[in-house]
Length: 228
Image 1: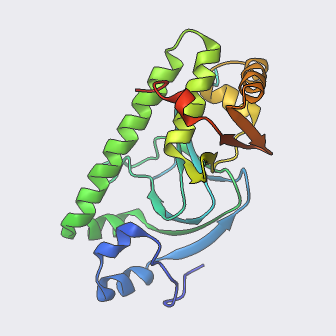
Image 2: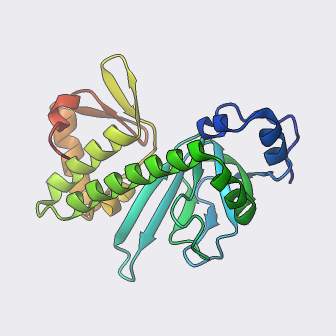
């Protein structure tokens, strides 16, 4: 459904580059929707018709091959838009998007969004910086899956999640994205049993603990150097 003109978009940093008049016009183009956990927003190969603004919850972007090996993965945190990849020049989505948690999103027709961006130099710079971040994350991911020892891949994956998707509480880092052992195994390219063994060792050494499906890192220094 269409959003109200009174919708509050102040938490979206990239929209701070819009003046009041431009923001008001943008709101007239927005639609609003909620998705339940594990619902599909779009799949690889679908027409790239929408740009999404994530207001609440977490979204996973992934691409797998025929053997279900994960070729690409990224997570979207609240107050960001997606997808960045494909802006201006691609007709179809490169990967699939799933709701990791219950989510609340706004969306805008892709062509309308892309017609606004070229007139905002600050916005273009923001996109370039985000694409650079996504490239570095993908490089980290490639480093992880190329590591021969499975237990090291699990530890590198924890380090990757801690560096990119955690918040600090006191001396501990809470990975904000809920990750099951099965999901961790997919990301690390190993078995659930190996993930369980690594978790057990790290918990016994008081390096991490688990709160449901969320990882709490107590000793961040242990993971320094796991991903360069």
